[in-house]
Amino acid sequence: MPIAVEDLGFLYEGGAYKTFDYSDFAYCSLTWNYDNGFAGGALDAGGLTDAGRELIELMNGKCAIDLAHLNYKSFYAALEHAQRPCCSHTGFNEHPRSLDDAQVRELLARRAPIGLCTVTAICGADSFSRFVAVIDGFVQKYGQDGVDCLAFGSDFNGSTDIPADVCDYAALDSVGFELIRLGYDCESVDKI
Image (cartoon, rainbow, N blue to C red; front, top):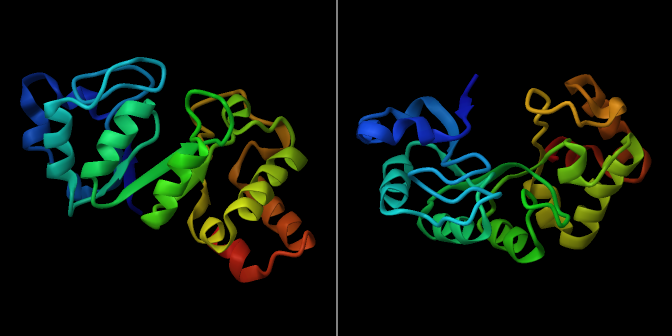
């Protein structure tokens, strides 16, 4: 099973990012919530650095570039250079870790996967029904592109601020059943 790396900042010192083998990973993110030698994090103000651009070039063709945890400025700069962008876990509200409509549309135009995070503050859902409503609202707004690109980006191991009834992978089956009850076909649910 392919794995991913969140925050490649540990590779910055000494230039280790230049020799790292990115082909072993499905995707890697440049930073976490704060600035590092590559980019500006969602809770900080820095931008994509020269080393960050070089890192993306080294990753292109080997793994997807995860834009999660980047601030607005770094998001667009990284998106400009990434051949295969994704956003592994995010939301669609006013939280600094969330994406706005313009960012979502940029990712949809590139057919990039967008993972909906289960962390309450980021996804804007404090219950099972609200989590399903966020998914349904996304699909209603973005149509088939939303179905094709939306995914679960849980962050189950990264936070305890998760709705009790959406706190593990088994619960995601229930989300799928609820989407079917709302009228989604099985193919669409499987895509999501």
